[in-house]
Image 1 (cartoon, rainbow, N blue to C red):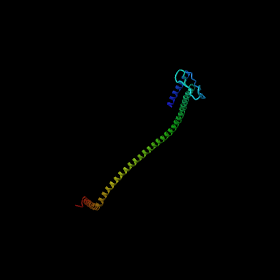
Image 2 (image 1 turned 135 degrees about the vertical axis):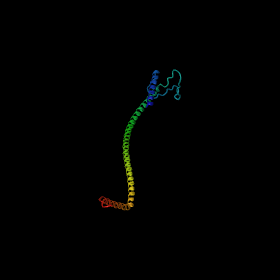
Image 3 (image 1 turned 45 degrees about the vertical axis):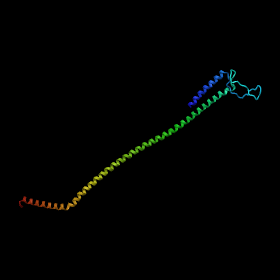
Image 4 (image 1 turned 90 degrees about the vertical axis):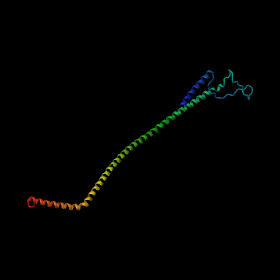
Length: 193
């Protein structure tokens, strides 16, 4: 569009320059509706003589309006091209904005989903950490219970293996105490010496 606008400016300057030139040299700008046949003075089959130099050479004045008209047509074509480009740009911009809006909505939805999933992940990781801590505590409790069981088993095994002998010794000890008590009770009463 920028190049076309620049070209239109240049074409307008060219039209103005051509118009000034034709006005200065008294050349008509109108288009010729009918091509005139050259006039032959001697022979119809012989071309007329022309001189390309000198003050009396005026060129083909009847065709000069065509040059300006052609430049004006080019200018009009460029103006139409600019209008079409602007229309296409507007349509493209509208389509871009529509698609951009849809993509922004998609992005927003995906970001919201990502945030929700990250929160859910944090909750799951917290639950896993809590479960792992609970599991570790229970494992430690089990180990302590196993140690206690082993300790009790050792103690119970010792009691089982030594119970009978200890019972006999305790029985003998109790009998000895009862006998000593009886002896001491007799000494106090004065009956026993």
